[in-house]
Length: 182
Image (tube, rainbow, N blue to C red; front, side, top):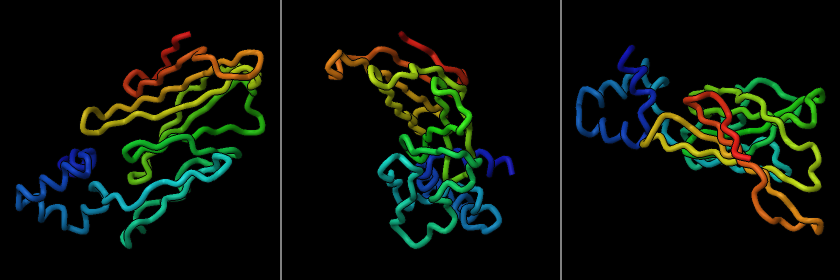
């Protein structure tokens, strides 16, 4: 089971290479008992719906029944919006009817393993007239198991034309905190 735990973190492409090199790993990967815990075959892409509502997985093959493309495994939130995805991880923004206007909350998940993580709250400018926020997810499993979220606050002039970046907040999963550059 330790080998299964280790292999479940191996990127899919690398796992396929390992199966070609070692017959024991190939046999191991074909065992139905372990198959559900091993890296799953990428079977589609996430399509963000207009208005930012949670995206759906658009299937590209017939063997996608193992992957929850609707993200139904996430905890229920009244307002959950798709923000970005990168190399199998999905970033969503969420709030409730009781969330203060100046609080921004994110949840990151892996739809293949059904693991999720809420990020610490960040405080934003509640007046959207002179600033907007754009968040991006960065994750490269072949480089590191860590992920990053970049949250840019754009600033606008009096005519509401973008004139630059007012603030950048970076979440680092290994630090479990936001780093602010204002």
